[in-house]
Image (cartoon, rainbow, N blue to C red; front, side, top):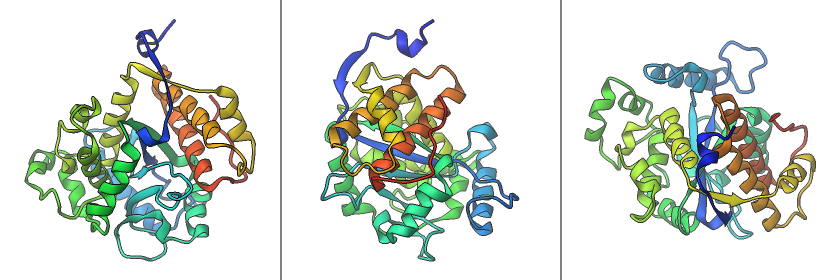
Length: 293
């Protein structure tokens, strides 16, 4: 039986990096586990973030951190991840591109410590990658991190989110929402989804929920290739893989999110998309297994 999404007449179109950005969402790490991937203090911050969001979210669906991921060409590869980083390298809690960290710090953070906790959701819009980079560089670099701002993205103080200064300090999701609202043009159907609330209203979980709902409601299907997707997962080093092949693999992973039939299938599809994106960023990583689907 076809799912509701699969039953909708679809328009086929090629997946293009320049028209797509992604929300990367990080699931919480166990706070008391001796085998947890991150130090104890970041896990405490994860717990605090989770606690704030339990008022209106299922604990199984909690996301504790979000950032924007933009696929880069050869001269843009350093500007792929943008977020407020609060626990890497001992630096101040401020927004920046991920290239402020060394390769080993980034590699460990994204592919070794947290690889099975990342989820990714696409956002589509005309020339969206370029416009997002330009918006970030012009307006959002060095935005300060604010833990208290989580209070305004969860009930009951969420009702007062509109009183927050739209240029004030932020947490990861409210900053991501601020950027998305700025770059989506009026002709984009995604704009109405993300502009229903002010940016301060969003927490990491609700931002991912809105993006997921919009992507699964799309009436187009990206041209994709399962063979390219499998190859990308099964090959350790992909330096010689063309951008066209990467796009076909990413397109397949994006379609899997739209066609998933239940919450667990959606979660797996988002995890697999995140792994494909991170592999295109670092061009290789080892000891990373695909989440079964």
